[in-house]
Amino acid sequence: MTVLFVILAYLAATVFIVGLVAKVWKYATTPAPLKIPQTPAPVTETGVPGRMLSEVAVFKSLFKSNRVLWLAAYLFHIGLLLAVIKHFRFFFAGIAAVPGLSVFTTYEMYAGPIMAIGLLFLLMLRFVVDRHAYISVMSDYFLLLLLVGIAVTGVIAKHFLRVDLVQVKTFVMGIVSFSPQAFPAEPIFIIHFSLVLLLLVYFPFSKLMHAAGLFFSPTRNQVDNPREKRLVTPWAAETPAQVEVVEEAPETI
Image (cartoon, rainbow, N blue to C red; front, side):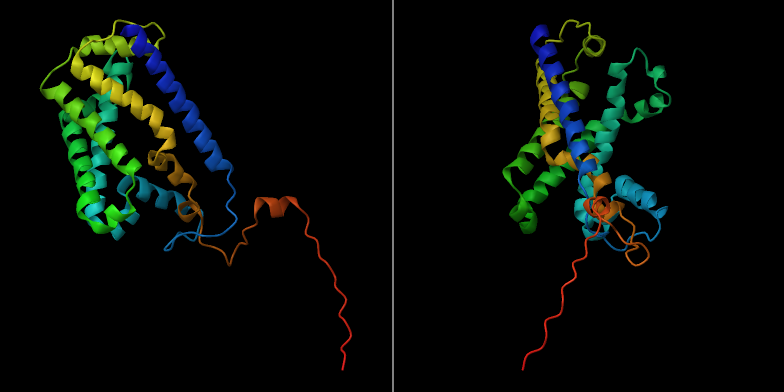
């Protein structure tokens, strides 16, 4: 099992990193031929970072459009953030190696439940709200169920069927340092770790890429100054303008 899961971990990490870099490169190199900022948008370039910060930190647009969906999504993202931070300890010899990380350990017990509640709330909206159910496809349900599985198995491993965290940390640090150690063969950890690997493989090809795509969205990162500054497309800037003169035909009676 150690050999199997070490190989799967390296494969999943490779797919995740290569897929993520490829998608970000595609986003970065895709031209934005139109000036299409979503109003109200900042009219200066210095206002764009502030807008992006409000979207990333508090989901400002979602808050204005749908408060119920915002609450569910925000609960999930807060729980996810706490879960990611608390899992940093498995990648370092000591928590002190990461400045400020010890502050979050006080709230780590709430990460899984908050994440699970937010995900179940989002899943419920897919069924009970007609407009959400209408636009939902199978991949939406699969992704939510996958994340719910990760959150629930994490809560079980943390509060109920407690796993040997020392052995888990030894195994994870062995993967990171390319010196594999014995795999913790506990059922709940096998399920949890397998779901995480599946998420890593699926991430670059799913809607979760909005985490990176948001920063390349023309509706969010453009300045609302079409009158002050003309937007020139990349291909128009590289090609000299050609003006064709057409002689006016004589009028006929």
